[in-house]
Image (cartoon, rainbow, N blue to C red; front, side, top):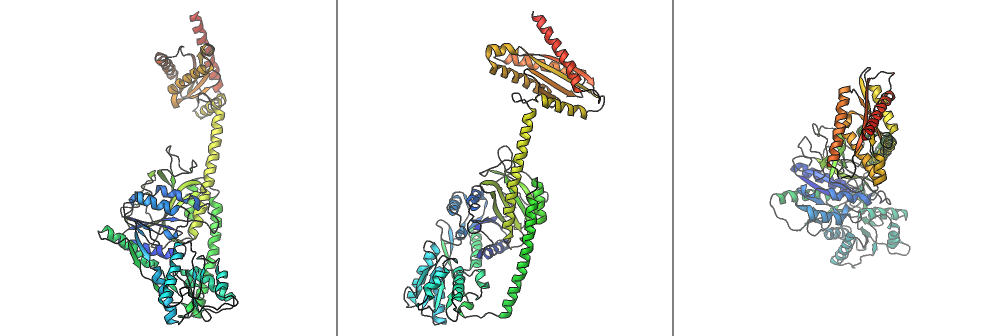
Length: 632
């Protein structure tokens, strides 16, 4: 898998969102420095705020992950918001993984755990407000009480207040949602009309802190002059917010590096406890007054946002054009070329691969709709920008191998994402980045566009297959599988036109003897069996050398291009030998027999197959009359 180096798998969700980008890039730096590959199983989750129909089917990827192929696993449980996915992943990891597993965001029994000390972080922030700012009226905007972190930080705040000799509830506790939706209610709770406003409010995370800042500003309050607001987690947005948040650094970068180091040391024989705690640090910002924004720096930052906005408009236009192009392709090869040509706006990448599932008949998920993964996959799309797959053969592989093996052997950073459209399972895609940076959000747009394009391609393939099937039905005999009369005329005419002028060809007419007595005595079902048997003999004798058709109830035509009279006699002998062999081994109460007529002639533009058939039919009928005379 990938190359000969050991690989560490990271299970996470939306690697471009918030702190996760920095966490993932810190993992990348650590694994690269230590010589491992990093393989991210990057689930996307709910699209926007409502569309769960994508995340509903991401769990199918869990069944084909080769857990036992990894030397270590890092599990970011907190990031995974898809219902039931955590439980399914944990069960599979415990069942199949043979490597050390480190949980980095919450306690998971049976794994090694790197736990951030939330209690110490809340106490550190409370002491900063108490000792450095002289605050005594300190409120708390908690997370939801159904959330494990919300409960933990709620109790940590009460414990910190008690240690400082303040009321356990501080200046009031309001239950938030770790997001923006309850900020207005919280602002009214803390600073509404007639309320004694807290001197400071500790928020249980940065998102709710930023939301509360906005509501207080709308109420005419100044931060930090009228009220201090602090956050928790140290996310990027909080450090770009105005005012810049004072917050608790969750030390995601340190946790990422410690997780990789822990795995490396365990593989080298060192022992670790089930839980290792990571101590917090404060990030001092403007929202408590410890720092003050530099207008020049802020102006430059705003100019940078303007540049980003222009780039985003360009990227969106690029994606719209590519989407239109990719959804009218007629083959997977065209789709591959379109991706290679247009997909350039989500970061520098080395290679991109889409592994489509392959069924037991060798058909890929682009040829046959699949709703569940299979145990084989094929690289239907392979864009190689750096020569990583130079000389590598495209072939079906086991999903245990997961990806084609690279020709190079340097540490790689690979992101795996499910490739599906609704319930339709196509497979999974991988992108290998250059350096340690993750891709940007536009990558997800490309994945969604590809998934829709693949669905369109599958439907087009199904339509073509249906048309082909209808065409097959229109020229084939349903009982024998040979051509019907229409099919025989079409194909024999095509074959005769393709022959060189004056080349010999032979037409043969074969008519079953005794079909009526078989139908009368044993039934028409048995008569059909006899016809099918004779058709099978014709197919076995002529194979792909001739065009054969059932042109009547018990009548067959055969056209053989480039056939001499000697060859025609040999075919006749083989035909009767095959009939004799069937009769000798058959337990049927009747004898299979047929009359045979053949005519050979040089083909010219003016000489038609119909003339060959006419003379062959006369010879067949003469043979049938001779058999009747002999019987009488």
